[in-house]
Image (cartoon, rainbow, N blue to C red; front, top):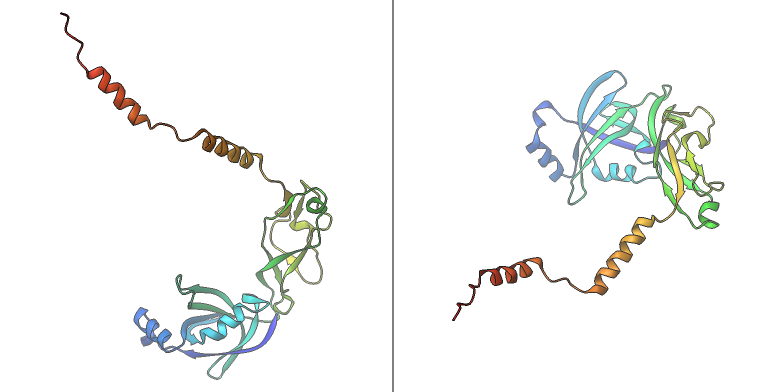
Length: 229
């Protein structure tokens, strides 16, 4: 999906690459990035992490298509990969890809469950979403923000598959049609049995440690027999 966001990237010379330079770049308020695609050479750049975070958290997320400026060069681009610092969850690095608006691309889009399942409402089952994203192929301008999966007819024990997802326009599904998307299940009996067994064990009280029993038995065996008078 197209966005009015304009990302201004600054080219990084070869001499400014490496871990130390990347740290200095982050301290200055920017992060390293790489731009590739459209049959052009890859270019090392730096970008504003706040702007990239805003795009990733938008409705279309990493499928957002925006204008990328590198000096006098301008192209449509999207985020294809990103790395976070695990503790502070700060962006460390991103990969950007130039996009040709007249060439189809493959992307993964979220699946949203819609409707109320009779297997949940009438049968008391639990909705289990198996697949969260589906891979599709389409023109960049036709990338949907998500795909709706209608569960309003999903009965207990039945499975909604990729083949049941709505089709239309230029959207082509790449994910296997037989792949399950969602189904209605129940609480497993094994879980209930485990809870009952635990309750019985608590009611019975703690068992005497085996090592103590063995110690008493050894002491009795070690006592010498009484002498005959």
